Image (tube, rainbow, N blue to C red; front, top):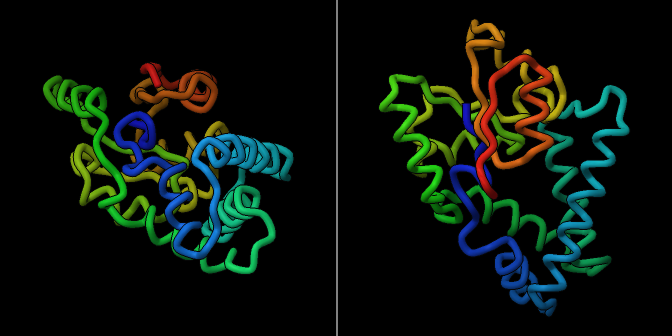
Length: 201
């Protein structure tokens, strides 16, 4: 089981560049460093909102879209073009051409397949992953794609892992999660009784 963003693929161009270019197309100028700082803070704010919800880390397609609307709004502020900027960014990151393989991820998937392991994806990405995965290597090696919006939970919720287990018909000790986030991947998987391997971000 592999995490996706940062583990197997990364945005190309970068998130900051994509936001800058999209804003510029709508007459908004923000430099990339300012976007990186604002994006990190916006991401953390949305993580805190999900953690404080009842139940914590529950999600669906509506919530995932709302989460990204909040992030885009925090980055750009109350500008008139905000709905159009959000729509363009949503569509941009839904395009397989916006993603490129991470070399380390390609090697990890190849090693897992060489060892005779079945490959699946377990990600906090939303439903857009369902269309991206078959079109981008090494995601296209996965026999199953589990996106948070479709499972109803985001990592690190225990329910995320239990939902995957039910769909695969597997016990926790039969599964290993490989990811780049110490909290969302390594610690959360261990709490669920899975094996886990952390790779460098």
